[in-house]
Length: 269
Length: 287
Image (cartoon, rainbow over all chains, first blue to last red; front, side, top):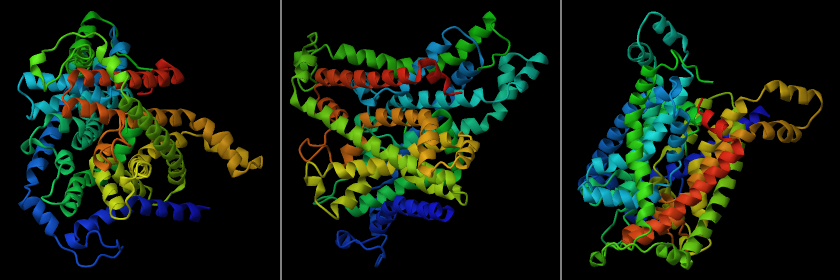
């Protein structure tokens, strides 16, 4: 039985990884052989597509855009969201349940429902095709996600430490700053990682509010790749691999945190 | 559940609001305000290609127009078909994967890392990978029925790990001694699964189902890249139709009406789920 589950598990892992392997090999295969019979063992491999990606297409631009937008979104939502989450997790105040319900409700908003007003507002204030013009819309999913994760995290911190600080006469703010914050690094890191991941992957808002190639994020740039005569599959797949690198690194480094974050907050998929 | 220290003084309440206010202000500004605006917009004739028409109030005329539109109804049918097939595939495969993961003792971290990669990839990348694999081996994408296959496969490939991880957490809360007792009573593995695992896994299954249904209902990136809603509009879901109305045809009034329909349907799904869980239990789940 144990052998059987072990064997099955490796079959599953294989099935999961085949599409990635196929993509990797294809991204290293010369264009004229791309649509030949697919074979598991690659023939001659070339770096042409990657070279074209960074030289002719300047793929650094969407990478930089994505890093800036996802980074700012993460910074802003973790900073503001953690304060809010602490209050929701640890303090009694009227309207608390309603606030939690609001945060949860917003996390279920279909993005498409608010594309039209956001577009009109951003156009009105001249923020279409700018970094803030993406970071602000990204708050609609990043903020509820961060708050939801961190409320769960703060609730399961032992309350004794804070109580001891109060006994010693420390006020609430000082307690947060000197007692809670230093032990919150794991929770904040998990929230930051997941927020960054969702922002790095976001597509609909970036497609709607980044109007030109100079502001495209990585997913938009890849989705809108056009060749002169035909679909430039080699470069598209090379770009797909490049876009997956940060994601794979994050998973490798923080698999444990991500799993606990997903199950604790039951994050949206 | 929550332990509140130094309770209910006025200054404590004020501080709590000060801590919560900035984040809440952002949420009101970027989510709550806009959804109200979408509703207001949906009551107006607003076509960005014809600015000389202005933005006159026309009541529910946009709704009347989209509800008469056959493309809306087929988009709703497509969305429903996609939700039903992809979510049932993902829940069943996710359950199998969770049970496997629960039993694997060696190298579980490695296995988790491997299966999490597709989940963490940008949906656009997953869609391109599957589009390339399908295009290089068949012409399914030009067939209105077969074009659904890669859509469901790609979605299952990407999100089954997420379902499995939620279910795995549920499995690990089940008391092992229940299985031992069942074994002593001579219950078969299948009987143990139906009598112990499934009923005790119900809450985790419901949560996973809710998140997947809401997500599949909003499907956009995957279809935009993999089939473009085609051939024709054969695989166009409601979010894609709304996007096309808004940002390709620039009919903002009509698009806003479609947006409100999407919003109302998502709201109904969420309400139904909260009724199923019980509202308070749902809010307390974060703990």
